[in-house]
Image (cartoon, rainbow, N blue to C red; front, side, top):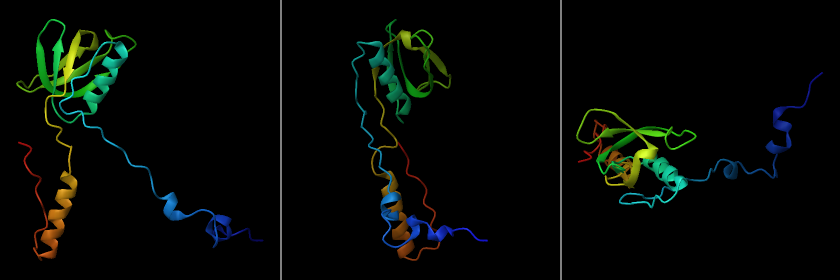
Length: 149
């Protein structure tokens, strides 16, 4: 006794309503540019949203604290707690090797001050250079990334 074959399923027969080309296309992601942005932090929700964007940002941010001190650096971690006092970000300051933990409740302002190192067309530029080298017949196809400075 044999059962139906996988190839006999309606999705694999000609005239199938399922088009594999359409199934394989996933929607893209739109990346908003926040470089240079200084968000208004009037509410707790606005602060939380801005800090989530700061965490996803690949550049430095300037945090102004409520005691008027400033820390510029890269936000590499965050914990979102029930309150602003139990929520915090961890920052690698630009001018120090220390890691600094800052409570959301202590943050007065955020400015997206540094260059977003992943913004732009760097991947497309790298691929273009790779294919130029390959077409010219170069044996060494390794391409070192460009300096971010």
